[in-house]
Amino acid sequence: MKKQKKQRKNKKISVLLFGCILFLAVVLGGACLLVSFFPTGYRIEDRTAQMEKVEKEEGDTVLGWLRVEGTNIDMALIYRDTNTDLHKLDYDFAWSYPKTETLQNRAIFSSHNVLNVSSNPLMESESFRRFEPLPAFLYKEFAEKNQLIQYTVGGKNYLYQIFSVSMVEESEIDYDHDSFEKDILSNYIKKAKEESYYDYDLDVNENDSLLTLVTCTRFFGATDDYALKIEARKVRENEKAKKVKLRVKSNYDMVEERMKEGDNHATA
Image 1 (cartoon, rainbow, N blue to C red):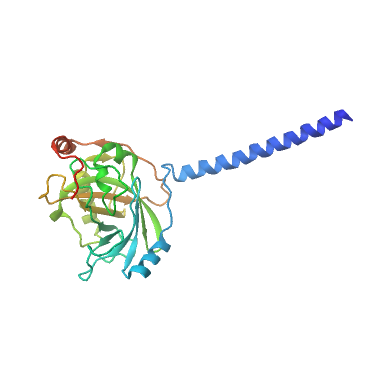
Image 2: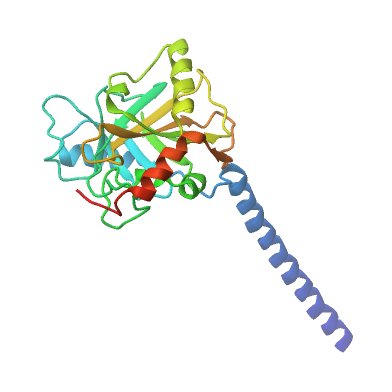
């Protein structure tokens, strides 16, 4: 009798252990599956409801939504026309001159940078609004760690991967087009890679969809007309987003020199 009870007890323990092992296997397997699709740890979060809410409350044409990894950028993308006073709007946003309401092969958005205009920019601050966090990409360690952008447009959430970080004369930036012919896009990509301070180990070609983010910096002084420009390309269908290696290029020397001689965390 005692032997039978002991056998039943051992059987229950075995079943319980098997159940625990099976549960752990499912949980860990699910985690591994998530990591296989999102090996960077970055998660897409739907922003279509937020788009509708902002459009209803603010009365602006909301083109999409933007989230940038490693920053507090999580904002509406609005259409800018001649009747839009960008300084009076009291919510955080970025804007586009083209009315880009569907996925194009080159979307471009700008936003203000008021609080992070130093030649030694801060990587983060609770006071940052709009595009103030973007100068953090001038630090290699930050750029290496944060490479993904979520762009919501046309009712869908897309993931983009950064392939170029640069500062260029604002007059050189094409703010007026959200799509290019393939030959023009190919040249655009080549130029963006040449201008970049980092060489990203990421293939980009004329069949990709690009996303351009632009803001002012005053990195080279209060009167400079340079803008910070970040280029990203959409993660391709059936492609897994993963962090890529990046190498600092020789044109980064001017950035390092300016950081050594410049002011510390100046604001406007």
